[in-house]
Image 1 (tube, rainbow, N blue to C red):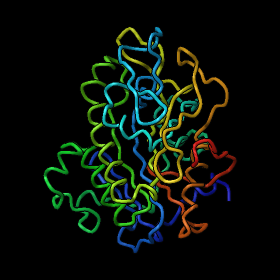
Image 2: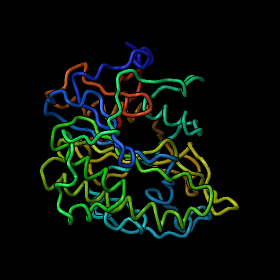
Image 3: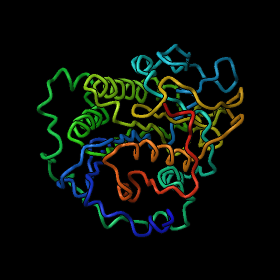
Image 4: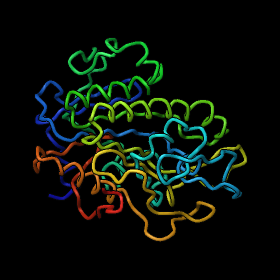
Length: 328
């Protein structure tokens, strides 16, 4: 079955619970069904196109570099000074610095990175008949944040992304195989450095680092793959409004946890960050890599895929190559 045929039919999710948290909102597919304990995937979705040149692939001293300073981490990479807590967790992550696509429209880019398919012109019309929205009610059967100590909630951050990451930890503990938590606000065409340092990065740093640390301390990270990505990156060139525009030719993602060679840096970009130097990777390669890790669980059979229109990841592999350097 081709991925495009798979997408046209979708996957009946009756065999697996799927949770999608969008800034505190949750969508579930038949979440009341029993869950088989295996590997989990947590997608941290950065909607809007995060400026990875300012986070994971910094260019200090270059005209495109911006004002932020790089700091050392527990892995090989240097990352942004505004991510000090994540810097202590980078031995769990591989940074893929050589992502390259052509889609710089938000919806088309989102579709491509989640499916590995170049989107059809009517991508915005695609919808899933197999998901139902539980945001109108409280998902008592999945997560009860009120049972968490105040100190735990404060550690993740009293904001939607923090609550979403805390809920993600709970769902992984319950054996949910796929969880998505979304942090929007990355489409920074104006005043990007103020927005990043004052809003986006403190939120990301606190919540994501707490999630990784908790999963690790509970022995869950070895069976949980964390994927951090958006639909594309942002221009190395800083525009006249102090922002960065859409850029798909060279950007970064993170893979961490289960099956990943933590602390690694894979791929590189030019000195100004405008292009990939050497081997470039596409979304289908990332999905093939996630699929390899996912299927390493003995409980996963050939039908254990997850996908929703606009949410989740489609792991049907029609030509993606596994990023072997990212695997442990």
